[in-house]
Image 1: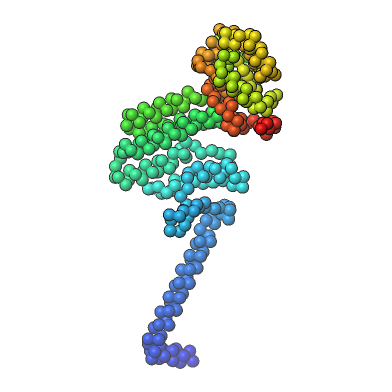
Image 2: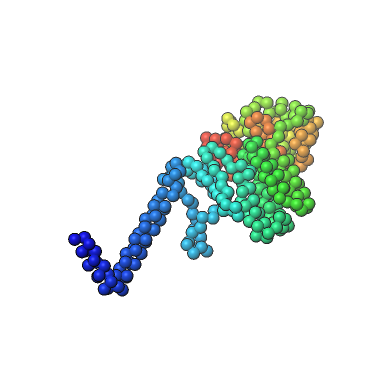
Length: 356
């Protein structure tokens, strides 16, 4: 019986050759399309299932009007750091770059910061791509200039970052950054420029006062305020800018008066601030403040200690007595001062608001 059915089927196929061919080919194509679709769907839904927590992984995009798709995955490298630092719902981030030899990636897990090597990844990748494109082992002068300018800008910004000054690891990262880029730069002028900028960066870092007479004088004055962040103002009665700053920012000082973590200190000399005018001025504008009028010889030692001649001169001292800045220009810049104090762990919200 089965043999009979097969003969009938074969005769029909042979009789209607064109129609049979179309049906068979169509059925084959349909099966192939279905199989490929099933494989594609399976891949798209399971390609990252081998990773733990794959259902919580996301790829960050940004809008891009220049792209045909309307979006781009090309983001600034620090975005991964910002996401981890400022968004509490983000458990971990991973930044990656497509280079000439594959993917360079850096994992930023909870409680970690990018190393200098991680920060350098984009520059190194771009340099490798450029070298392969030019088919050369010599980095062009203009690209060396770009690298040098990038590091100089980073060092210049870091030199004014109060929070970074209080963190010794920041200096190590900047040093590693400078050394790594310096290896790529061969032009002597650019190399020397990089060294000069790094030298200036090093001079602006936090340091401990050296053992000398000036340090003894300063320690004696600040001994009652150990453990506090000290905002020191070197001034005199004869200095008009000094008096203007003191009188204009009385509300700012009142905001931090008796604060457990912050102390304003005013230091002048007997030679530059005669006794009677000094007493009258302090009674009117600095009553209740930490004000010191010291002998001219001691004041000169402090000038040498903090390397200044002109006044007003503002100095920022850390909790452990380290000099965070011997030329702190934000003492009376309310917003910047508050930002720096927050970075140093001061609870600025626990003080009274400044009167309008």
